[in-house]
View 1 (cartoon, rainbow, N blue to C red):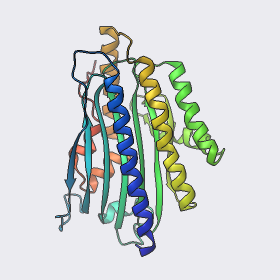
View 2: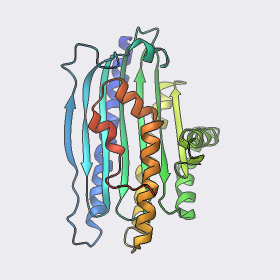
View 3: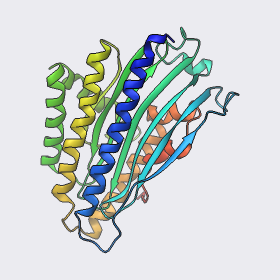
View 4: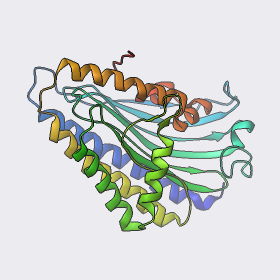
Length: 291
C-alpha cells in the first residue's frame, strides 16, 4: 500500500471518531428527555486490540489494530452500539479474491469505520443502522449508508428519512439517491422469506471516483443521519404502546437477526478477518422472539 494514503487514513479515522462522539452525546441527551423510573442510559466504552496477532486466525487471515465498542442500555434505547475500528493485516487468499485490489496488494489491507445499530424500548420508534467505512488494498474506497427498520411502519417517518438522505445525495450528484436507494433495497433483503428487512435508505460501496469528493459525501451521510434519526426518536418516544405492539416488535427483531447472521457482508468481513466478536455481533437485539 502506497505511503500517500497515510494522510487520508488519518483524516478518515479522525472523522469516524468525531462522528462517534457526536452521536453518543446526542443519544445520551435524548435519554435525559424521557421521564421514566428507569435509569438514564450512559455509553460505556470498551477498547479492544489485535496488535499481538502474528499468526493467521481460523480463516487464514492476519488482523492487527483494534477499535472501541460504545454500548448503552437505557430508558429510550434498549440497546445501542456505536463502534469504531481501525485495523490492518492480510486477507486469507480465498477471501482476498473477493476484495477489490487485494490480489494486487498480496492480501494486505487497511480498514477503518463506524458502525451503529439502535434497538429501541418503544416499538413505535424504528430500529436504525448506519455504517461508513474506508478500506485500502492496492486501491482505496469508501462505502456505507443508513437504513431504517420500523417495528410498526409509520409512513411519515419513512418519507422524512428518505427525504433527508435524498437531499444529502442530491448535494453531491442527483444520480446518487436512486442508485443507492435501489442498492439498499437489494442488499437488505431476506431471500428465504422474500421480504425486505425494513423500509430501506441508501447503501453504497467501492466508491473510489475522487477521494476528496467521496470523503465529503461520506461525512455528509454521517451528518445527515445525526440530524434525521434523533428527530424520529423524539417524535415517538413519549407515546405509550401496547403489549401487542411489543410482541410485534420482538418478532420483527427476529428478521433483523436472521439477516445479519446469514447475509450481512460486514458481519462476514469481521468474522473472516478475525475481528472482535463482541463488536461484530453488537447488532443483535437484547430480546427477540420467533413465532
